[in-house]
Length: 140
Image 1: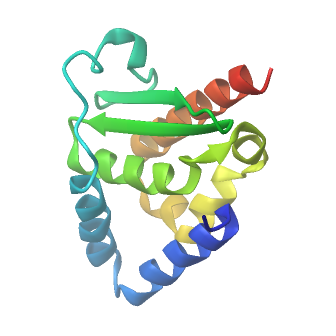
Image 2 (image 1 turned 120 degrees about the vertical axis):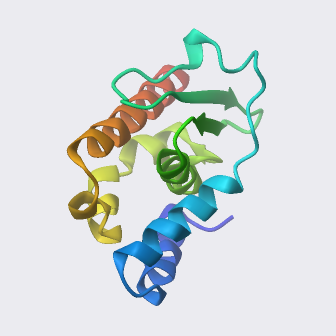
């Protein structure tokens, strides 16, 4: 498996190949379409991410090798794509890797920090906080 830094560099390269932000938004939405859907049972309140304007659910599964696998979904296309970007970076990582990851710096590097509305930025921060909380619980 590639390191988190390698996966981030790959994403940066992919974004750089796209011209303007309209193309990048389309790409983000396309990434979201590739997410496996959650079941109705997984769309329960316990998996809901608070602080998001859209409906967002994250499912965290601890793996036998000590890594965390994340799956997510949203009722909004762009948010679903943002989930896909985030999960591409953190899913399959150890709690230690996840907690050491500076998501805000990654979003700045990808250009997301300056091209998302305040609501979407806050929602993304809420998703990151939820992932960090789950990683902290596993690490302890």
